[in-house]
Each structure stands twice: as C-alpha cells, then as structure tokens.
Amino acid sequence: MATVLERLRGPDPVFSVEFFPPRSDDEERLLWRTIRELEPLDPAYVSVTYGAGGTRRDRTIRTTGRVATETTLLPVAHLTAVDHSVAELRNVIGWYASVGVRNILAIRGDPPGDINGDWVPHPHGLTYAEDLVRLVRELGDFCVGVAASPYGHPRSPDLATDTEHLVRKLRAGADFAIAQLFFDASDFLRLRDRVADRGCDAVLVPGVMPLTTVRTFTKAVELAGVPAPARVVSRLMRWEDDPSSFRAAGIDLATELCADLLAESVPSLHFYTLNRSKATREVVSRLGLVRARV
Ligand SMILES: Cc1cc2nc3c(=O)[nH]c(=O)nc-3n(C[C@H](O)[C@H](O)[C@H](O)COP(=O)(O)OP(=O)(O)OC[C@H]3O[C@@H](n4cnc5c(N)ncnc54)[C@H](O)[C@@H]3O)c2cc1C
Image 1: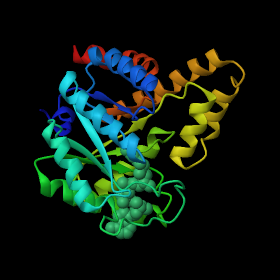
Image 2 (image 1 turned 60 degrees about the horizontal axis):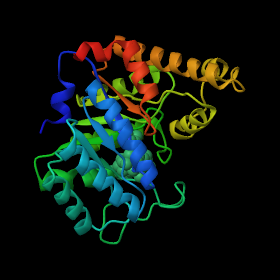
Image 3 (image 1 turned 60 degrees about the vertical axis):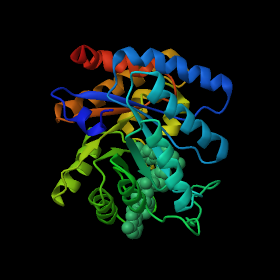
Image 4 (image 1 turned 90 degrees about the vertical axis):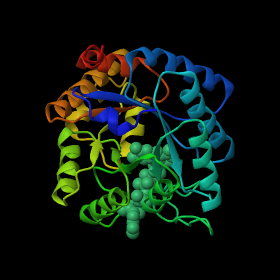
C-alpha cells in the first residue's frame, strides 16, 4: 500500500478527503454512499477521524479497515491519545497494521466532554502528539501525519511557541501535517513560512471546508478558533435567509481559496467533507484537479 508522502510527491497537485465515524447505521450508509461517489475522483487519500469514546472509536476502526480492504482508496487512520494507555494504543496501531493501514495521523486530542477543560493524560498514557508520533514510529513502517494550527493552538501562549511545538512533533518522526481551518490563503502560507524558517521541510497540507450553510460557517469559525474576516462574513451572510445563494457563495469562496493556495505551489488540499461528497466534488472539478489526475 502507498504512503501519503508518495501521493503528495507526484507531479500534479492532488486532493484528499476527511470523514468522521458514523454515529448510527443510517449515518454509516450515508458515509458509504459518499465514499463510493468520491472513489472515481481518485482522491490521494481518505482519512477517518478518531472518535471521542468507545462505540465511535470502534466505528472509526471498522470504517478505516473497510476503506483499506473494500475500496481502491488509500486510508489514513486518525488516532488520539485520549483515555488510552500506551498498551491500548499499541493494540489499535497493531490492528491498523494488520488490515494494511500504513498511514496514521497522530493527534493528542481534547479532554472528553469539555474541549476547553484541563488536559489530564491517562495514568499510563501519553501527554502530547509528539509522544504518539514516536510510539507509532517505533511500532512499524508507518507514514505519520500530525495536526497544525494556522492561528496557533488555543492552548498555546503565542504563535512562536506553537510553531516550536509543531516543529518538535514533525522532527519526532512525522512526515506531513494537515492544517486546521483558516479563512485566507495567507494565514496558511504564514504557517508554512514559520515552519520553513525553522529549517523544517515537512509537507504541510491546508485543510478546507466549503462553507455551504450557516451551520457549517458557524462550525468553521469554532474550529478555526478566530472570527472570520469581514470580507468572508459579508460574502456569505448577505445570503443568510437564502440557502441556495449562500451555498453558491460558499462554493465560490472555497474555490477561490483553493486556487490561491495552488498558485503558491501547495501540493495537496485536504477537504473536511462532513461525510458528504457534493461540495467537494464541485470544488475539485472547478479547480481541474479531477481532470489533472485522469
Ligand atoms: C487535521 C486535524 C485532524 C484532527 N483529527 C482529530 C481526531 O481524529 N480526533 C479528535 O478527537 N481530534 C482531532 N483533531 C483535533 C485535535 O484533537 C485538537 O486540535 C487537540 O486540541 C490538539 O491535538 P494536537 O495533536 O494538535 O496536540 P499537540 O500537538 O499535542 O498540542 C496540544 C497543545 O500542547 C502544546 N504542545 C505540544 N507539544 C508540546 C510540548 N512538547 N511541550 C509543551 N507543550 C506542547 C501545543 O502547542 C498545543 O497547545 C484534529 C485536528 C486537526 C487539525
């Protein structure tokens, strides 16, 4: 099975997609319809987030395994250190390896129940993503990714410290990083410059979510951790009461953002799909990314 790094080092820019573990059988059916709709577009890889607790974790593991064994797609398994002992993490990593998953996104995670609460590591667990990167590396020949925050992680005192921590986890053995949501291409490019200025040449991939509804817009602001710029608010919120015009403006904005990033030689775009395919399909078609890969 290929690695993410191999897919990102091709001659043409590519795209990838992210799903979350389904919470019910209905959601599982919807997710599989989405996966089948995206499969012919040949995304570079598909990643499945790691749920916050028991059942959702089982579904993450099951979904990632099915992507590995039942589709032509390259799976990336997310894994967090939340509520896991090192022994449990070893088991999950071993299971991923046994179904042929070679790519893991090593994430620290948030305190369950209250993401702003104090982070308390499992008594026999890990404290930072950096530790998880080392563990995954120790256990096999995995390609490892980590998370990056263009505006700085909310728990970091300042951008410089946050960048130091990102570079530490990349140097601990990660091959690439996927960025949290941001609103202007320059926000991502500044992150890329900060990392490069520290002599680190790991691949950084921007995360993009087409803002097709007021709800996704609110979610994006929450995930980015900063207010959206006035330019974005005014393009979208004038259509607050007109869902189809809102959607059209959101697709336009996402396409423009992606085009700006590609113009700056970004090798890949990572789409937060919310388990739907239509918006991603529209944006990548408009960018010519599908045609480029045929
Ligand atoms: C692409 C992406 C995918 C994600 N997938 C998931 C998922 O599947 N499941 C999920 O629950 N959440 C997911 N998240 C959210 C993630 O769990 C949160 O952002 C979490 O708060 C931090 O995880 P991290 O891996 O960035 O942590 P870390 O890199 O460990 O950073 C956490 C905090 O500690 C600081 N820090 C890091 N290293 C050190 C150090 N050595 N010393 C001191 N301080 C340090 C950092 O600056 C930061 O403030 C994802 C986020 C992104 C961007």
